[in-house]
Each structure stands twice: as structure tokens, then as C-alpha cells.
Image (cartoon, rainbow, N blue to C red; front, side, top):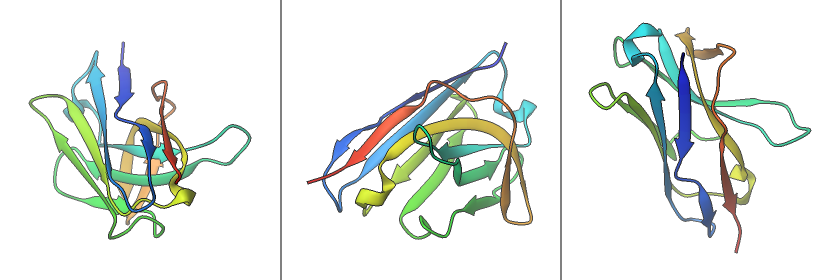
Length: 123
């Protein structure tokens, strides 16, 4: 059974950095076309942040995070990362890891995700 465990969130000042990790168990990254991150706060719509193909280097990013966030994966560790820099208060959200696909520069999500990790950007 697939399990996704997100970590690395926290409180950071505007302009700061965080690195999120998502450890995958019960499957390997190669079992899925892509994996990535979306963010969603209670009562708000989901926003896709970034995703990466598990079979080549294709990535996709939301316009709001381009140039600030970098997604990467380590297939040997079955883990995907999201390096976030130049964080802004509007990046505050719960970040979830999910499998899916990246097609035409767009992340498509499967119905699986972990418990999420809270990112708060505030002075």
C-alpha cells in the first residue's frame, strides 16, 4: 500500500528557505509517471506547486513559484524534495506530496497524498 510522508515544513521569515521531503513507501517512484507537490489550506482550493517525471527530467512549476522553488527526486531513496527559496507570506499553506503525471507542462494528480506539512512564512 502506497504511503507518502511529508516533512520539512516550519515557520520561516519572508525571504527565507525551506526544503520539504516526501518519503515514499509501499511502491517505488518508478511505479508512477510523476510525483510532486500541491498546497491547500482548509477551505481553500488546491494549488499545484510542482511535479517531476519519474522517468526523465521533465518538470513543471506553478507560475507563482517559478524561479524560487526547485523540485528534485532521489530514486535510490524513494524520496522527492521541494527546495523553496525567497519565501513569501503567500506561500503559507499545507504542502502535500502526491503521485500523478506531468503532461504538456501541467501537473495531473492521482488521489493519493500524505498528511501534509505546514509551511508558515511570517515575520
